[in-house]
Image (tube, rainbow, N blue to C red):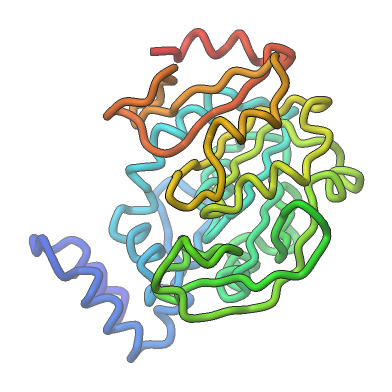
Length: 282
């Protein structure tokens, strides 16, 4: 019955207030806090907590995130059956869910420190799944424990930094590891998606093998969340690297413009997929 109600809300002609209504219903119906979302043509469902704005947004957009469309297109462009994808800041698993259902990439490593979201990830990608590894810790500069700050209603804004969300109301002590340490266990990453709300530079600092592995890296860079400048970040990359701003249309731009969001793609001339850049360069 509740499925019919929220589907009616989603498909109604009401332009505003849909998220508010669904969130209110989630306070009454516990099942909405672990809602199994099905997308036509996909064999795997995605578990969502429909009291959370990030999950509601996914649900109302039929499992699609409009502002992620360009980056998703770029990832598909560089996809290969022998490449491993590291999703640092997985949230509900938008990217692994798509890659798994569309049989993209060889293996997907997920890193999500938010325990409540992680509990749903385990249901979306059960332990029997042989293409996804779920890891409930953060990645940073050194092996450590840090407070993870988040708002239960805005899970996509959680961060190990305090200045990214003024609405953070929960603090949880979470383990931190490094890319280098995890790399020793599973091998080098081929493609990295890095979206950690201001903690990006610390993750890169913990990757001493960056200029040995030369993976493709996408990171979200919002300057107001960062302690240092983008130019400071570039110091971690040797002279073989190039960076491009990711357009909403799936094209890469050398200079940021109104067609671009906050995602920046780094790729080295030493990466075997570097030549592919030219086919999606604006």
